[in-house]
Length: 321
Image (cartoon, rainbow, N blue to C red):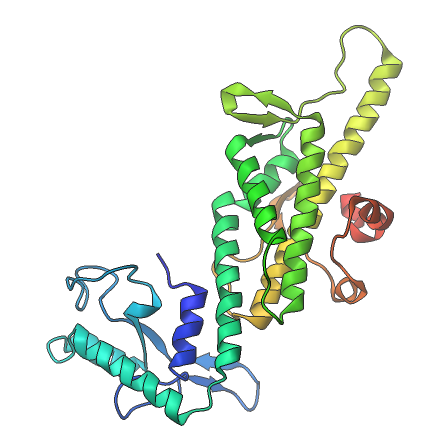
């Protein structure tokens, strides 16, 4: 488990971005006057350690060890102190320290509780989406639809993708962060269209518990004219599938950029962007589909297949056509 974005927002907000150790209360975020970049000094300390062999790790605990209730914000010095002198700082004492500090923040600092509530709600939406898309392994799905000769989507992947799109479409969005919402809604629309396009010609594969997109240009008997026509149509259909995958991946990366700009600057630093594999004479490399600034300024979101086909030549790079 890891600390969720929502719990992290709540912890820093209610702590006033200051150390909870009594009489310390040092600020834990520094913004450079020269570069404008931020340095995070605070540490999200576990009251009961994440592992049983850690500080206070064998103490009884109800719920997730990475949840807000089991976290306290500390400077590095006092985090090290409470974890080294466990006898002096048992569970009850650290909880008391945390509660007193948050009471001091409420009484002494100007904390915008309405904004904090919005930040936590948006962070919770990002957490939920991130969990769903990580379980689906979008890079693997996208790669299969673009590069496999006879791509297969399992029943579970189809179900989870449809549920993800439905989850986005029925959200009661908090106020603010319009680009974040718009990027997710665009991703849901284009992914729904992609699934519809795939299923139009898909055939059931009981042994794989899913559906395969077959090479439906193959026919019985000798009919070159029909064969050539079906082959052209098949290639056009596969290219549209490829373009829709590319478009969906651009929306996914737009969403990630939007999260970094509005909710969490460090979002998916380890995982990075969603990508597509590409092969050339020089070997395999990762291609990261993204919208340009001019595209975003002109209104990037996917609206409908009809609109997409009208703008396709300008939306899809020449290398993809």
